[in-house]
Amino acid sequence: MKRRPEQSTPAPGVAARKIPARKGRTRAGAAGPYAPAIRLQSVRALLDGGAGATVYDIAERFGVSVRTALRYLEAVRASGEPLYEEVVDRRKLWRLMPAARRETLTLTTSQMLSLFLSRRVFDFLAGTGFKEDLDDVFARLEATLRRRDFVAARNLDRKIFDVNEAPHIYEGRIEHVNEMLTALLREERLEIRHQSIGAGKQKALFEPYTLLVYKKGLYLAGLSHAHGQVRTLALDGFRDVSWRRGDGFAYPADFHPAELGEGAFGLIKGAPATVRVFFTERVSRYVTRRLWHRTQKFRRVPGGVIMTVDVKGTVELGSWVLSFGDQAEVLSPPELRENVARELARAGARYGSDRGKTGEMTAATTGTKTAAEDP
Image (cartoon, rainbow, N blue to C red; front, side, top):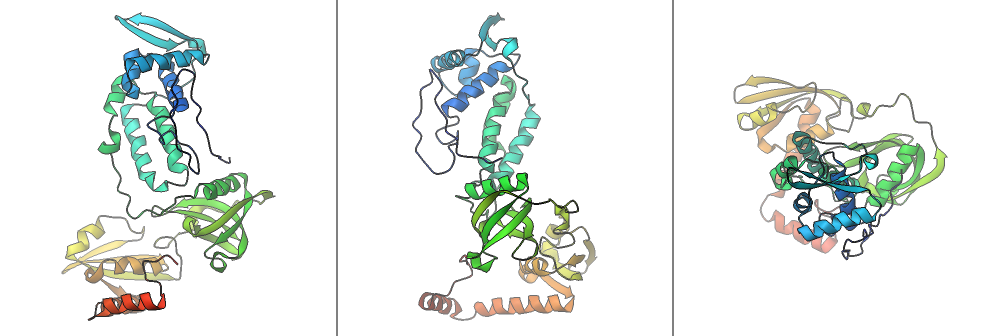
């Protein structure tokens, strides 16, 4: 369903925080751990558990004073929730009346850790709305933890950390993602402008089949009317996306996303080839400890290992081999070996005398784009 910007309104009795206006959705994290309405909902979730909570539990959970915790209780009561208090072992517990309780999802500490790890892995989606939604879900689930589990789960943002290597910059892509998801779920067409179609200047129809995650990037796969076939388009290549309400299509029964890159060394398919690559001892341990392709086989030889793979297309495999520099050598097929050799020769030529200065002067005087510039 289509997501639109949300506004948090202060709950009765809870002091409102001034949140700077910004484009996109207002998130709980924009002005602290919880915006007032989200915090009130979290307090309610805490009281919804059968164990209840003391005012000191509430203060500790949300990092506020006891006086503020009391105001939270009053705000929950003022919102119409039936609260009652009970003394257990000389502790005054606050609970919701049984009739008002909702079925809640209670997580163990290990489940919370697993959820947090998955949340961190998807930090690269910042700017698309997915990360922000995950943050909201996590905040709500956190409120359901028992006190001892909550204590164990503190500081998880430092205890579990994911290094996002060169993530895509998706800032300002929320509306594009909203349009894609709406069309994808409703099985309706999109009107797009994408860099791969007329350099982004030409409008085209697109029938979305799958939203893919590949190498910490988002891709939309589907039938491109401009190409006349199923294509996989990178999110950062979209210039404009519009959902065509009511313009439905029949989702193909024989389509499966696993087939998009089946046999390829990634996503880009090509002619079948059996590839043999020699890796030196220096990198052999790194190479052999990972699954690069389901057909890979390794054979130890003097000075290193030989990897053999049967792939459909060698474009991505060639780039991968080049990333190892002089620690890898393509043995076969001859065409790939020659391509890699030419690339390395051109790279070596760039490091000749005064080449760097010449390149800078050429780019500055002619306006030629360098390799680091986005086309």
